[in-house]
Length: 129
Image (cartoon, rainbow, N blue to C red; front, side, top):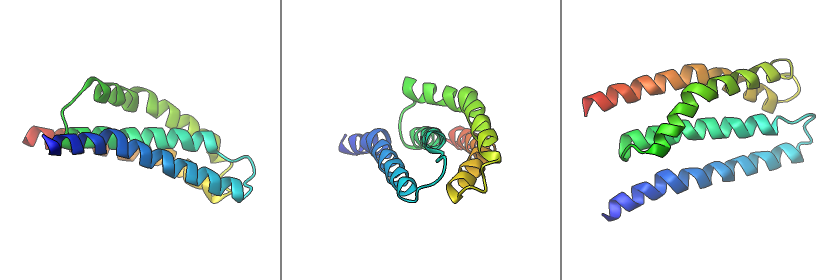
């Protein structure tokens, strides 16, 4: 019983708090660096999307499937590709402004590789159970 509670806390709270902490830390670094036209909103959506991918992965591997996991999966399959396309398009010409712009562009593009591979791996792992 205690192990189940610890797993639930790690998946549902710790991942969220770590993501928010890292986002705020990165936002502060960008502000201190005085980056021109910083991609803060795009980076926020990157954190949401990749955080959702981590949440779905951890849920599949260590927890029970839930409505929340289903909503996250629908987001990752239906909305995230559109959002990542927009982010990549917006950052394409801004790549030379800073490393933050370039990495935002790259992470937007890489989603189209990471997400399908993650879903495939989770599907294969789930069928082995």
